Image 1 (cartoon, rainbow, N blue to C red):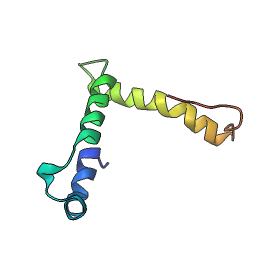
Image 2: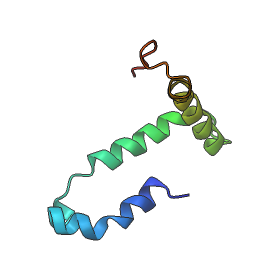
Image 3: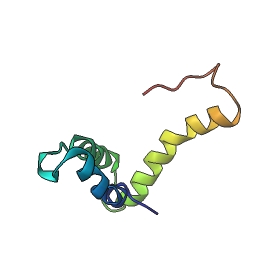
Length: 78
């Protein structure tokens, strides 16, 4: 499993070449994602289960839409 933080580390060298030193880059994307993770946690005793359930409930409608080719009949906007 590759978490987003580990995935981001895989791109550090390329990002530095493309955008310059790390201290001048804007981290809003990652910070926003971390804030989203905190909102997913409803149970502090089982945070990973809580996050997994949240992601499952978010992904299910889109998967049903894809599996049964319902894109013309259903639209799931956030």
